[in-house]
Length: 406
Image (cartoon, rainbow, N blue to C red; front, side, top):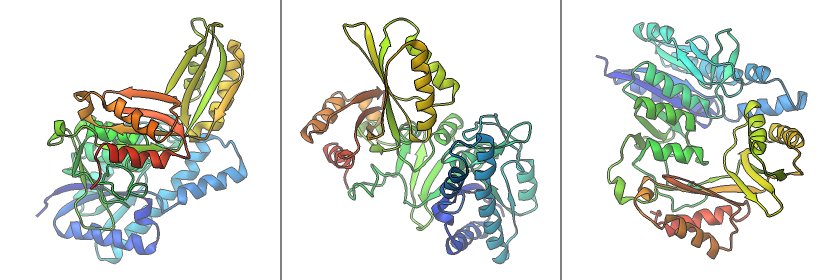
């Protein structure tokens, strides 16, 4: 008797070697024995994606993005085949598919494509035939059948999108930690595992540097109300449920503290203070596919202005090149790139109705003698750009100040 359909996703650390692939196979089979239909999304083995990026860099420092997708998509193809073989050895039927084979159609934006639609007919046929379906995460194809990838952490997006398309009962995200914590437990051992967290809080935490899940996958889960269970592939313990509304939501002011060291700050000096100058810079960056985050502008009495903004570290070469070109076009001055920065953030839906969160955060950083270079806020988060060296100490201080410890 079938109990329902579960979509599971296993990250690179969960399938890092033969032994771990065999452990995953046993876990998947255990669910099958309980009567569940299973679609299993798998990332590339361990550090395979990073190794492929390094390999490409040795050949060409600025490779065509289409060819990068062609290269990086091979990592998941290895994983799905090996997991299917491991399940077959346990005497259960399994079949592996690439993203393109199961009909994951994306736009044409290589290296960070967006899913347009999913066919999933092959998955449904395989499930009907009693097979465990293994799908390569992180990838799809354009309408013209070019292979694309979905950006860093894209296997999360594959799993959530398939869970929505197949109307799965639950989407389980398996990782190397036991759930979502109040901060990174490797930085603060007193970090506490959360039993549940809202989509909004998780989206904010993922966007601000928490590396447990890809932010875009949370956007899809929130939009279609897909229940997500984040848990460890090395433990049977329950993890963290990501849901629409958490219990006792108003009792908790701050849910977590995040740290992101993968951003850089770019400053354009002496920008002419007239309409359209800033637009000239950011239109060029947008056209080049660079995501700009925090922006600060200071206007001086000389009628010139400095504009500072942050971009992901992965975009640094492209961002520098485009910004210098844009600066020259609008008659601005020097472009300064600062890679020695980190973003520290506090997140919580409770701060909407609790004044004084910003004051407490700034006071804590001041007592640590940490200078704030940039500030941005949303309804449920406050972020500061600071230097990298004191960043981890700042995480621990804020975590303690907001009473998030065990």
